[in-house]
Length: 370
Image 1 (cartoon, one colour):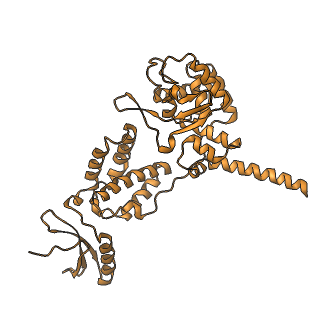
Image 2: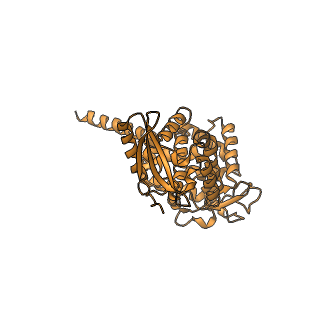
Image 3: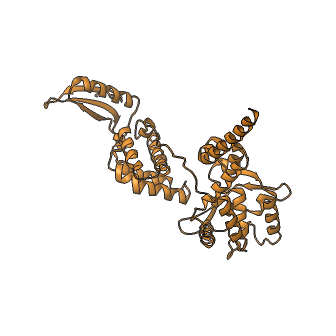
C-alpha cells in the first residue's frame, strides 16, 4: 500500500515545453488519493521561490474534495447555513452584496484557488464606482464567508486577511443646522400623531428600530432614564419582529433631558398599549420603522428642508451634543457604539469645528496677555 503523502509535500520537474512545474499536496480524497496544486515558472529559480511559498501556505492543511467547488457554490451553501441565524434585513443585505458584486466578479473562481491578489483587484475595481462604506461592507461579507470556509477546512487560509482591508472614509455627515432644526421643530409641533416621536428621536439619537421598539417598562420617569434593549425590524413577509439591539453595546440605559421626561410622562397618562410609540392605526403593535421613515420625508417636504435620511437625525443629535460640550465617551455610550474611538472617527467633522473654536478662544486669550 502506497504511503499517504502529507499535505505540504511537493516535487519539482521540468516540462517538455521547457517550463518548470511544481506540485504540492494540499489534501486528500475520500479514498486517500492526494489532491494537488500546481505552480509554474519559466526558470527553476523562479519556480523554487513560488513553490516554497505555496508549500508554506498549505503546510498542515488537509483539504477535502469539496475544496474544488467554486466560490459561487460555497456562497450558496453559506447563505443557506446562515438563513436561520441572521435577521431578515441582515441576510437581505448579505444577499445583495453577494449577488450584485461578489458573485459576478469572483464566483467562477475555485474556492481553494482564490488568492489575495484576486481580492485586492476586486476591491480596487469596486473603489472606482462605490462609496467607501459600501466597499467596506462588501469586504465584511466576503471575509465572513471565507472565514467560514476556513473553519470548514475548505481553504488553508483566508485570503482577505492577507491584504489591507478597504478603509472607511469618515466624511462630513448630513445634519440639520440650528436654523433648519428650528423649522423642523415648528413643523412637527403641528403633527399630533408624530410630534412626540420625532422630539424623542432628536433628544436621544436612537436608531430607527430602537425608538420604535421602546416599551413603557423601559421608561423610568422618576429617575429620568430610558432603557434601550430591543429593536423592531420588518421581516421579509412584511410582519414586524422585536429582537435584540444591533450590538451588545446597543443595550444601554440613557439619561433623558428634563423636557423629554415631561413629554413622555404626559404621553404615558393616555397610553393604551405597552408600546411608547404604537402604530397609530393598530396600537397593539409598535410603530413600523418604514412608516417612521416615510413620515419623516413628508415632514421634511412640508418644512422645505433637505431630503435627509432618518439616520441623519441621529447624526444631528450627536453633532449638536458634541458642539455643546458633551464629551465623546458619554455620546458614544448614549449612541450605543462599541467604543469611543468609532464615535470620534464618525464625528470628526464636529470635533474639528470644536478644535477651531478652542484655537480661536486660546488665541484671543493669549493676545490679551501680550
